[in-house]
Image (cartoon, rainbow over all chains, first blue to last red; front, top):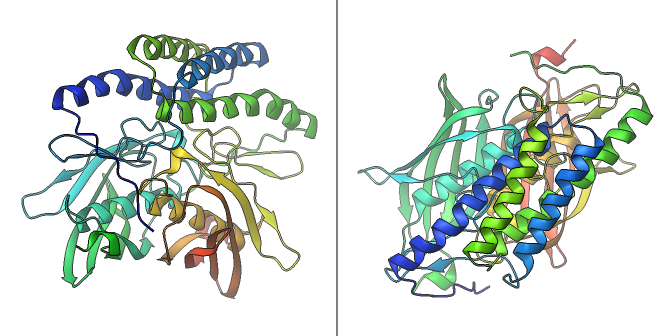
Length: 208
Length: 208
C-alpha cells in the first residue's frame, strides 16, 4: 500500500487563513453533536433544526473534496492532519486532542470528553479510551520524518473512566530496527484509568 | 462505582415515536460532519452555514438533558443505548453499528466508515478499529442480563483498513467465573485487517 500525501506547500499565512475559516465551523458542529444527543425538544422543533442543518450541509457540499481529507503539508514540511478523527481541527468527531511534546521526547494531551463519547452511563466508552491511547502511543513512537503505524496494542482497564476532563500520555520504551515499543496511560483527576502498551512499525514505504 | 440506569418503561409505541423524531435528525448531523470535513467553500459560505448550525443548536438546547444520554429501557426490558458512541441512534459520532446475533451466539455488524473516521490518508484510524472491536467483542461477551466490561484487550494490525464498507465479528472462546474470553476481527472485502482478543469482566454491581 502506498499512501497519498499531497504536498501543497501552503505558506504560513495560507494555513492561518484556512484555519480561521474552518475551525469555528468545526467547533459549531461539535456543539450541535452534543445538542443532538441531549435535546428533549419535540417533533416540530427537531424538524425545524433538521431543516437548518440540511441547508448548511447543502451549502458546504456545493464544492467539496472528492474523498476524505487526507493529510496536507505546509511549506515548512509540517503535517496538517486536519481530517484526523483524534486530532483533526476540521473533524467534528475529534475532541480534538492537542498533542504536546515533553523535553525527554514523551507526548501528552489534556482534553475534555462529553456526551458524544459515552459507553457505560456517564462514562467514556472503553473503545474511545483505546482510540485515544492508540493515537497518543503512535505519536510518541513517530517523528515528523518517521511515521510509525500500530503493529499490536494492548489496553488494561483498571477502572471505568468518567466523562469530563482527562489526560493521556505516552513514551518510547525502546526501538529495535523498524519496531518501536511504547507505553502510556489515560487518567482522570483520581489517577490512571487505562494503561496501554504497543509495538509500532515503520511502514515499508517510509523506510528509505 | 454504581452506574445509573434509569428505568423508564417506555411502551413499544413510545420508543417508535421517539425513534421517528430523533433518528432523522442524527442522520442529518452525520451528513453535516462529512460535509464539514470535505467542504472547499469560501469564508462567506462557511460563515452562512455556521450561522444556520448555531441556530439549530440553540433550538435543540432550549430543553435538554442535564448530562449525557445514558441508557434508557423499554417496557420489555430492552436497553436503549441511544447515546452510545458506537451503536447509538441518537449519537452522530456513531457510524452507527447495528449488531446482529448468529444462531451460535456470536455477533457481527456490517457498516460503512467515511471521512470522519480517517487516520492514515484514505484509511481507517487504527484507534477506530480498536473502538469498534472493543464494542463488538464486549457485545459478544455480554448478554442483556449480564453486562461485561473490558478487562484487557489486544489488537493485532495485519494491514491498514481502507475507508468504506467493512465487517466486524466476535465470539466467546470460554467463560471462567466472572471472566469471559472473546476473539474477533475487522475485515474488508479482501479479508481480515485487524484481529482482537480480550477478557471481559462482569462488574461487581452486576453479579447478583
